[in-house]
Amino acid sequence: MRERVTEKAYSKLNLSLDVLGKRPDGYHEMLMVMQSISLCDELSITITDGEGEISVFTNRSYLPTNEKNLAFASAKKYLERAGITDKNIRIDLKKVIPVCAGMGGGSSDAAAVLRALNSFFGRRLSRGELLALGADIGSDVPFCITGGTMLAYGRGTEFRALPEMPDCAFVIIKPQFSIKTPELFSRIDSIKLKARPDTDGLITAIEKGSVIEISRRVFDVFEAALPQKYRETTDRAKLELIDSGALGASMTGTGSAVFGIYEDERIAAKALDKLRESFKEVYCAKKIGMIEV
Image: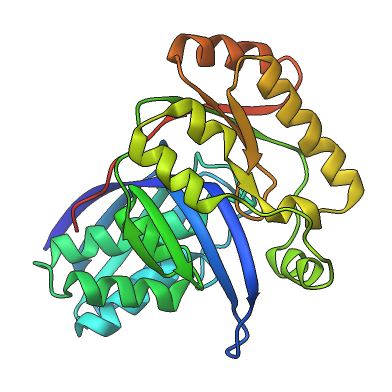
């Protein structure tokens, strides 16, 4: 038996991100409005008869292909949880989402593997079981499984659906630096935040379907925790996004990607061309609705 399935792994943006404090379990209490977007990796998964061997091949030579790769880890955990011992899994991963960007690239790959395998094997795991398995792999994985427009809370693994975001376009700049997530959490624990996102106002703007009001409320507290040399880079990126027609701009996740929201796709396309003169990595994307699981 040899079967092949394909799946897209959609990236995410944090329209808002707040860190409310450290939890007794060592994680942080988060409050975020998250949005899945069309910028995606592509996975081709080949299932053959065998003894449970897993292999990963990717177009990025610097990425791990063992259990440190979340696509590998998710395939292994799925087979274990579903009680499947007689299949080999080969994952061919075409990486497009920028790495170390705060866009959930690894988490989206893990989520895509879980969706694809669960569908192939006749949905052996319920939606709840699949989300719980995703949470064991990483905090962003449950959201990446379902996508859409969500309010996420707890350590980020709990969420509720919000009305679908109105039509708009996103332009994303990936600056040429990255910072480790644990380092940013450590830095944010050591500072007093002077500003926080207006999460309720953002949700109201989404409910009203107002791109302008949504754009005015995008905010990520991790920007305050960036080292100054990096903050200067993200501030410049945000200013150039605004100058190119974005209605609002913010960093996403723990960075370093910065995004702008555009009401008109034509303006976003022109901004993309202009910003590529100043930045090496610039992308354009649309929103993605919730994925049926």
